[in-house]
Image (cartoon, rainbow, N blue to C red):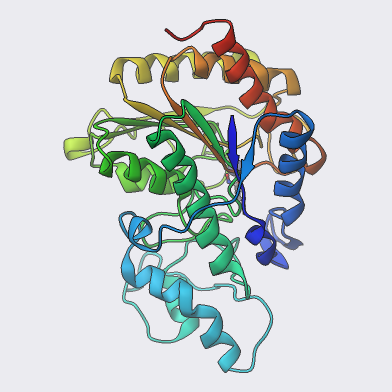
Length: 349
Ligand code: 6XA
Ligand code: ZN
């Protein structure tokens, strides 16, 4: 399987995030992608290539132009005021306030974000832009005939909506790739989000559309981030009704429960009959992950890949979360190796 990877992710290394009542060093750190890349190489998964540059146009198919302009220009505005530490939002237009867009940098940042977990640093735009190009290049390789590809994106993307950042995410790499498939002639794309956290951004982007089916398996928002989306009764709206499915699972869920939700997700995806599948591949479902309450073990990721392969569809894997840095490479690449092993065994027609 071809892996697309850019070193530009090193340009983004936030100092801290606000989590569980504390300012903590960011769990989302450069060594995550380094470990995944190393494992891809150690296991000889396939060639590793740098992304091409498709420009901003395919990103603008998903993200609001004003949001992109703000994000791209935020750092220059910040340092022009004499600051050089990370930019962090701290006030949001929640109920009782007006959802107006202020003109000051920190006001605008509150408007364009939903949590204190997505710091903007000097290199954040470039890293996120390159991650989107990584996803687009992997997508292009499939458009050119590859059956599968791995977009080793960092920063991740599934919490980012059209004009909102948060949860370590700025640009929604999986959504951008899904839209590119549609723009290049595919009719139906299914996004399967296996990250521990609900993909609220991806859900929001496609909630009223029937050309993208979204299925997510995640920690129940009653106890887990992002808290305000990801419930089972969110089934899509308008033209999108019936094209969104959530499997919120309890704390402590291991493969027995998780795998059953995967089976159910795959059944729904099968019914949808997509042309292509995009997997939001987070491995923070791992038992030793520092910010998750699920209990998947490393061999479970092989089974995950096999089950996804059994869908028999071209599949693009897009890297999302996973913070047990020592094991993130093993677990992510296990999914890809399980997928490839199943293909060799003839799981797809
Ligand atoms: C709170 C936790 C953010 C979770 C980010 C993640 N700052 N999403 O892994 O998939
Ligand atoms: Zn996650």
